[in-house]
Image 1 (tube, helix red, strand yellow):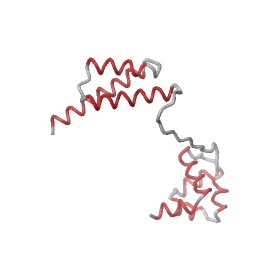
Image 2 (cartoon, helix red, strand yellow):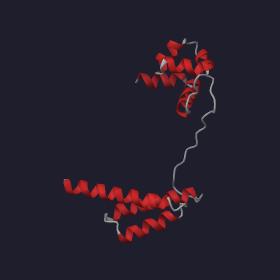
Image 3 (spheres, helix red, strand yellow):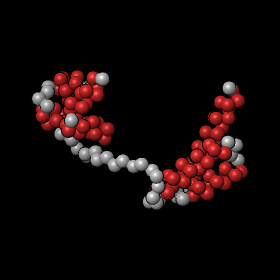
Image 4 (cartoon, one colour):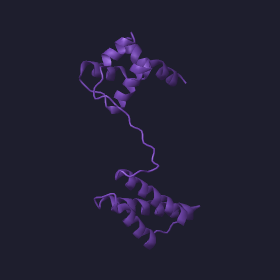
Length: 143
């Protein structure tokens, strides 16, 4: 068990080292070259794990270069601004009711509505979901 833990740690560290070396070489195309160099010279991992790492890095490099890959991508549209007050009022809820129903701190909600603070991207996405389909959010949070 101790031997396996040491092996895993050194393998992970080697993988991280390879990736960081390639990253600092300024282009993603160099990832494969650097990885293959280390793979042949220093990488003390079973061949299947090393191949998976190499394939993953190559797929990432190909994707970033715009080449077709099997990579699944999802594009989301998060609005730049949301009107928190209109979302809440559209649901005919008080600040306290909205905060309790959707697990948002009341103080945060008040600051958003007064313009003291702006919701971050995750909060804007969450608020947009609440605006578009509040029942689904309520059912999900109740489960």
